[in-house]
Image (tube, rainbow, N blue to C red; front, side, top):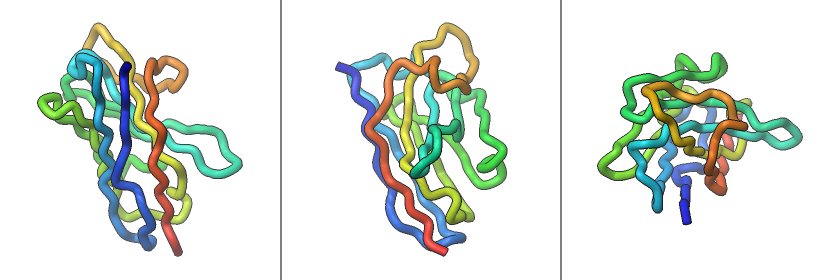
Length: 126
């Protein structure tokens, strides 16, 4: 079955950086747009970033736009989220997700995604 496994989370001081990674298996990775979402305690899941099948199109939430980069390596079946200048409000469980697409676009809406990982915890201390 399809698996998405996130890694790279941890505890970091405000102003620091993290690179999250998501390894996908049992799917034709290049046929899927990918996204990152996060959920903080007591809050709803929110969109963070998305990337199209070939990596040519990306989209970011305003809250992370200037501080983050989403990328993918279709040879390695991986998607990444580089986050810089981290803030305490970035503290959350971060999830990657995959959606089968038939064009070169990204997908912003969580309900459209087909598969989800288990998440990786990111904690930013002040």
